[in-house]
Structure formats: C-alpha cells, structure tokens
Length: 185
Image 1 (tube, rainbow, N blue to C red):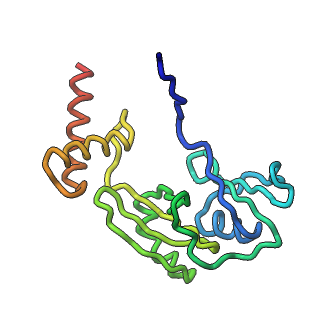
Image 2 (tube, rainbow, N blue to C red):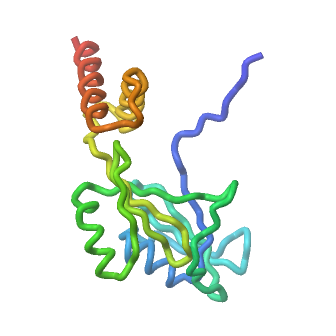
Image 3 (cartoon, one colour):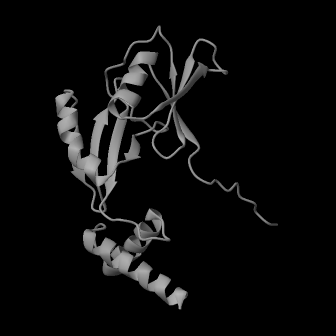
C-alpha cells in the first residue's frame, strides 16, 4: 500500500500566548521591528485578542493577548512539549548593531557562535526565549540555505569533524556551484 504523506510547504505562522496588547506591540514591533498587520478577537477564545505581526518573510507571528494578564517576567517553561525558543533571521548588518541596541534598552542577552551561524538570545516580557540568527554565509543564486547546510553537514561527517565550521561552509558552496556549473553545460 502506498503511504501518503501530508507534505508541508513551510511555516504558515507561529502563535504565542502573550500578556497585554501593549506588551506584545512593544516587543514584537517596538523592539524587533515586526510590522503590526492586524488585530481581531481570538475566534476560538472570546476573552482573548489576536494580534498579527510580519516577522519579515511575509508569513505571520501571532500573539493571543488579554488585558487582565500581566507580563510573566520569568523564564518560560523548558519541559517536554514546550517551545525552547523562536529564531528569527537577521542580516549581518543588523546582527552587528543588535548588542548596542539591546544594551541601550537595558535588555539582557547572550551572544553565541554556532559554527555555521551567529546567535543572540534574549527574552520577551513573558520569558519566551528569542534568537536573532545570522548565517555566516551568503546562499548562492539558485540554492536555498538548507542546501548549503546539508552539503556542509555531509562534508563534516565525511571528515569526522565535531561541528560545521566556516571551512565546511566554503567547501559546500564551492561544491554546489560546481554542480550547478556542470548542469548548465
């Protein structure tokens, strides 16, 4: 029998439980620059409002709010079945400016080198961990970032290396471009 999969085509939206309307707007639009798209009642829970923001790729990040709630001001639960963090893509220019901008606002953060990307972690007013992520490579024309990462991973494993480094990324891009050039001729 043929097993038919449900084929997903990307993240449609992510919804988080927030506190107040203003708290959500201050963080998602005010700090992270996500345009406020629309607002309407939560059609599944009438005591909540539903705010929609554009995280930059035309998809949506939505927040359920209720004016009776207060900011949690504690780390969000990190248990089985919970979201550990949400990561958002930022340009290298934005990434380099982010630490100063966060410090100016008194927002605590941690900066990390992840081998194939750089990351800054911070929390919203409800303790949800947010990552600002910036790849260490430019994706070649005709490919997706995941193509570079899958190729870099294959090279890393073949070489017995601990994690992906910039050398793996450069070699992966070279390999992808060579494949594209062979197919073009």
